Image (cartoon, rainbow over all chains, first blue to last red; front, top):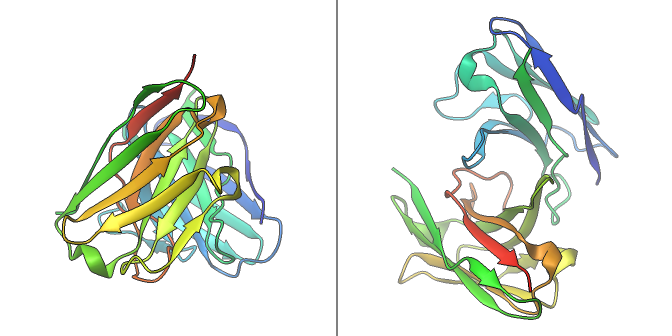
Length: 107
Length: 121
């Protein structure tokens, strides 16, 4: 299963809403996770099951979608949210495939 | 608190070998599958290998099949990645990650801080 993400880079200002997209080459039901990776840090799980927030993840992060189309929304960007975001499918495993990532940077 | 600490990375020549270790604490190690995921320079995340909680089942990405072997020692709360016949394209930060269930990975949480492997002559 091939995962694609768009846009490759999203430029936004603090306080703005950010919408990131992830697409699977075939249906993966809701078997999708989202991760955040800040520079120099390990990835952090944000969302699993397409829409369930992981422990201690702020409510401004939300996930939606099923089948082949998924969205991660950050309702109001904070300074610590500027990072790279990856989606990952676990419907047909292995392999556990990641998308190429979306970089969210400051406009 | 769950902690994962990788070690064993370094500089190695093409064709060489390295063994990575990941020491875990803060949870009942033998009841969770564990994975290795890498991040190559300028690229995205790539799942490398996984092992079930008991160690009976292992999974390896096609890109490293026949060269990398995952194992675990539940008495030491440690998972290993033996990397042989290393190639320049194996250069990456290698992360150890905990899986949510015993049998097979689904998502990865949490992750260790990573260990850098550089394959170069």
